[in-house]
Image 1 (tube, rainbow, N blue to C red):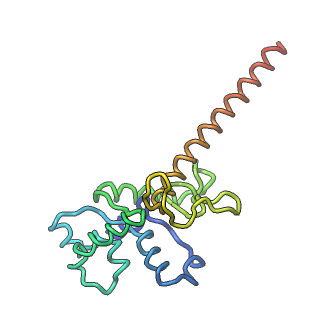
Image 2 (cartoon, rainbow, N blue to C red):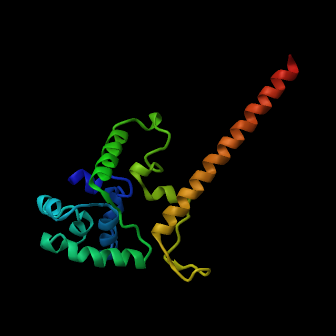
Image 3 (spheres, one colour):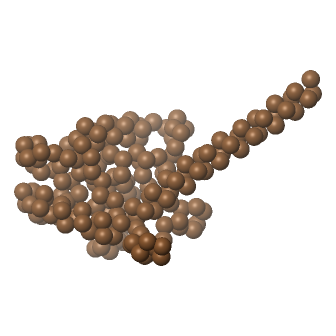
Length: 188
């Protein structure tokens, strides 16, 4: 149960330096971003001590666990309002994603296609930065849609940018291979 609430895709990982000087609001945000829920029926929720509501458990550690379901609706609504991710999935899915994360964390970065900063299994806010300039801006209103833009939109934009960058890198590699083949063919 604990792994499913902390290690699936979407549950951010933080370093001690990131929360040494955080504000109370940042503490709540870190609790929400650093955990994930899994979907459970009444029996499974009871058997897990309602820890299927891991986000709410982290945000409100003193709240009796039988109130997590009730408060989860309010937390989810706030996430929707401020465009923040509310990470949840079936128990099976969250378990498999947690196992994948643990396995990938145990490997050297050199064995992986993505580093620990940009792999979905080991998300980091550093994946949103290019050089020293942050790509993610403060929460704002999208002028075209009138909707509030936040972290969830930034994550989606970062994924699209990453996919596009990978496609462009593959295209450039193919162009380079074709040039080498052309030069090699003309020399023979």
